[in-house]
Image 1 (cartoon, rainbow, N blue to C red):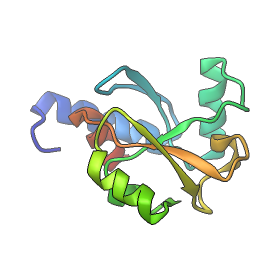
Image 2 (cartoon, rainbow, N blue to C red):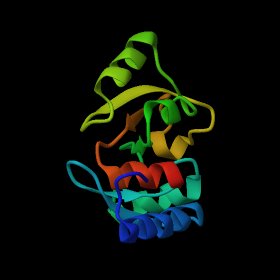
Image 3 (cartoon, helix red, strand yellow):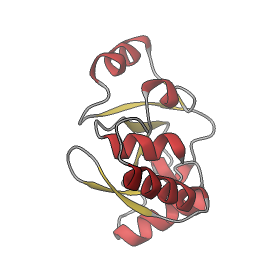
Length: 130
């Protein structure tokens, strides 16, 4: 959590604990505020759809702390990986093949998932710690 004040570090730690405990949190990104949860927990992901009033056919993206963290859960092509390394973190979502641990509910049953590495220190710290 480099570059974060003590109060912010404490807030991120509490938010990360909440995510690990199955709760939803609101966090800032470089573009908007996000509604965060454990993307690998189907019940928590279902709660995000419910809170947002979003159709489960409209997939959610997966926020991660880094490209390397994303690679634990997705299988990008060589071209997609080069793109990710060149442009992330940043205000874009890269759609890639999901790994086996990514639940159907997150992707609407699709084989691909959107991956975000926000260019915001709080968002990345939360993703790293949660």
